[in-house]
Length: 236
Ligand code: TMP
Image 1: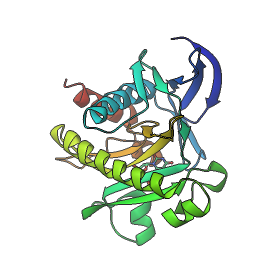
Image 2: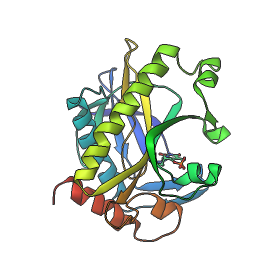
Image 3: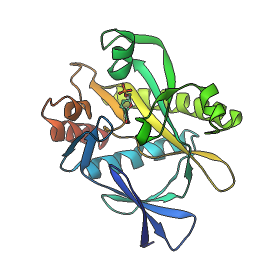
Image 4: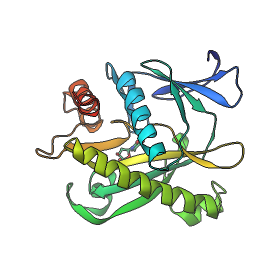
């Protein structure tokens, strides 16, 4: 399948049309941003890690009964996916306090929750992706009640599968962000990516951060952290 026109360029990926109007090609860049694009940089090799890692995890999730947009990995940086209409919600699952949760509620990072939490942000860069609840999402017609219930159930199922999977690799899945899309028949599928850009991944033994927080917080060792996650995923 060949790329035709570019449909969209985001902060970390480009999306192209193909000759098949139901399919797109996603191309992963090494560009990194944080704080709604205020901080910009490059993480060398990130596009390859994120593409291959997302594809591996999407295939795992499909096997576990979670429908996704994944069709076929085309190259190190490019993947064929089903064309979806993205639901403009960022769905965040947390197992451990960190990031904006720790800041908002004035708690330290690293508190293990009894049960995972879920929250939504309105996917809108102009507004800085504000937090909202499901009533707000309904009021804004971002999704239907049924879609929100489906998305919640899918997000918690993704968490169950990924927590267990990462644990076997010596990684704690602290939190992550998911996006969902609608197929032409209205079916909801998992879309976007699952990568160290969109997850907090801590080494189980040392709590070392193996994710984009190293870039957000100028901690150094960013490329090495992405490579380490990739190495463990590939079973090396
Ligand atoms: P937060 O603690 O900053 O709200 O982030 C929660 C999770 O969501 C974390 O794993 C990083 C991910 N995330 C994104 O994927 N995109 C974003 O724009 C933000 C703010 C967070």
